Length: 202
Image (tube, helix red, strand yellow):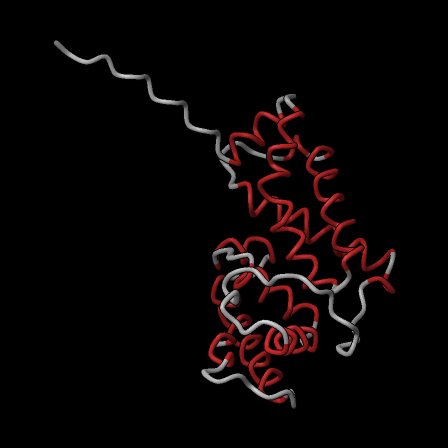
């Protein structure tokens, strides 16, 4: 006699499926996408803008734009690159409207926040602050592409699509940005911890 089996629980919809349903009118599901991605966007903006209030405003703006431009989402598209297109546009608009909230001064005080993978293994305190200062010294374009490639973990082909350049150009820009980041990191007079975090910048 066979033991009755329990039906498998339905799989949770992926991001693209959720956004497709938002586009088709089930706008309440935008809350689920917010829960999945708001921290990721916040950390991205925090390192791009170096202002907690600006980062929070930008996260909210991205989700407002998701609702406003939901008709532009195609079901066959990947959600995350589409989200980052909105994120880049929102950041650009804020730079123009409120430039003082997005300082380019590398000596500006850095917000205190946990750094996400792949640098979570860094020594906290001084080593973490040292890396933040090095990131802050990069030009905004270099900082952005590095954040997308290493912190938001977007694939090179997706970054190329977002920036409107070739995948090869993305690789070159990331390599140059990493080199400049490492130079800035090593030039910081603060002492390195044993074992050192310089490897994390490579």
